[in-house]
Image (cartoon, rainbow, N blue to C red; front, top):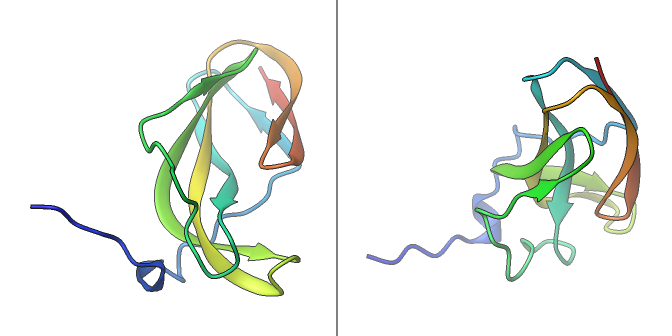
Length: 105
């Protein structure tokens, strides 16, 4: 069985925020951004199991929803980008071109 998701299936009640400054404790996970594709479309060629390690934690993908985009002029389909804190420290990470200041304590 193969399921193909349509951009129209994006959950409009699940709105991904853009957090410019994140403060968390080791072990805590939070949505910090949303990854979008072209306006009105989900990101293409997305590996849902891919993670990215940073100095203080790990970035992974979550549930489908929507993200407000200035470029698109409103809400567009997106997938949650989740930061999970692993180590104490400070860093600035870049997610989809947005800079996010992280402090894990």
